[in-house]
Image (tube, rainbow, N blue to C red; front, side, top):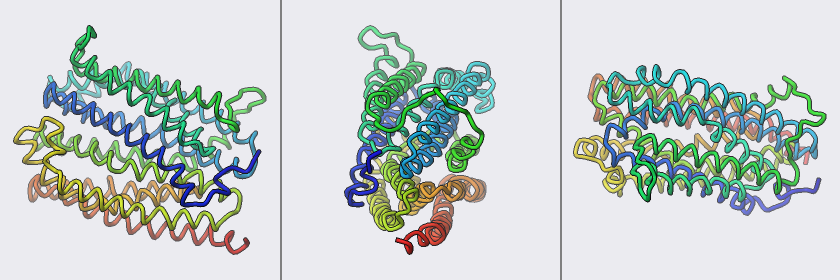
Amino acid sequence: MKENKMATMPMNKLLLNMSIPLMLSLLIQSLYNIIDSIFVARLSEQALTATSLVYAIQFLMIAIAVGTSVGMNALLSKRVGQQDKEGACSGATTGLILVLGTAVIFSLVGLFFSNPISKLLTSDPELQNLTQQYMSICVVFCYGVFLQTYGQRLLQAVGDTVLSMISLIIGAVINICLDPLLIFGMFGFPQMGIAGAALATVIAQWISAASALLMNRFKNPIIHVSFKNYHFTLAEVKEIYRVGLPTIIMQAIGSIMTFAMNAMLLTVSSTAVAFFGVYYKLQSFLMMPMNGLGQAAIPIVGYNYGAGNGKRIKEVWKIIIPVGVAVGLLGTAIFMIFTSQLMSLFSAGEELLAIGIPALRIISVTFVFGSVTILCGYFASGLGNGVINMIGGAIRQLVVLVPVAYVLTITLGISYTWYAFWFAEGLAVIYSLYATRKEIKTKVDPITSEE
């Protein structure tokens, strides 16, 4: 195996080279989630609320797909850094078995439990019907989500983020094109309403997954899935989930938080739920550059940790944190200045604007803290520690945010709910910086002193 760019390319150039395609692909992915909501909002505010309710379920699927693939990515990058090609291929095969097994479970849940789950999410009959329509399609045919994420992480593990980006762009473009055709029945397509939005998403995910897997088959020079002489071992599963499980939990926390916040906000109004769905997708769009930078850092840190190159690992840390701060500040400025324009994208009425404009401005103050917390989590995951990512995510999205939001809502009203983000993000960034610097001292400093 030849020395690859993660060992030799100047770090500024390497991070730029690997993260820009990831940022672009994630931004596009987030963009088509937003466009989904923009089209659905034109049906009705009830339809927009239904997609916000289902987003908690979708987020859980994405959490498990991403967590498993991140754990596999960290393992494969380390083995590539150790020049262990056979071990990397074995890890990729195990990863495929895990993601397919999980997809089957979700598909069965969608097939048999979409209606009961819809009734659990809301008591409104119309909202139940819209929620069930959207959920049943997205969950039953969820295989594309898992295989798409898996294929992209295989490419990222060997440093090829451009092909990973292309596979995601293919899905995004298809989704954006299919949305108006299937929702409104344009150019001879059936008018399917909210079910059309779900079908457009599923078709795009499957095509994106197929393209990512084909790119791995023909363009990945190192890692290939093979069942010849392959042995499934619990040790390898444990290795994947040592990083992957905390990431899954951290990602799933977002799903639990969304469910809890929606349940609480429904006691105020369905418009508040619609706003929270809008906010979450806008915020996700902003944080995608941080996720792209962090995902690029995982294989770089993992490779150099496996190769015993502590100096390069520290270079990653010195670059990503200042970048995170800069992007967070830019995001705050955009949300402060263009608040009305952002809300108007979603056909917001007077009540949605009255809740959304001040809320977006309050929450945007915390974007710097959120950016740094996310990057700390990814950096630590590259060193084989996914717990920091999990705890940081739990603080900022659940264990502090939801209780404080609940107390503020029942005591001071919906206008003050959003200050809960200040408490949650502030505590999360303090913990994440402390824990990650401790990880650097424990794992990176010793190998740096030996160089």
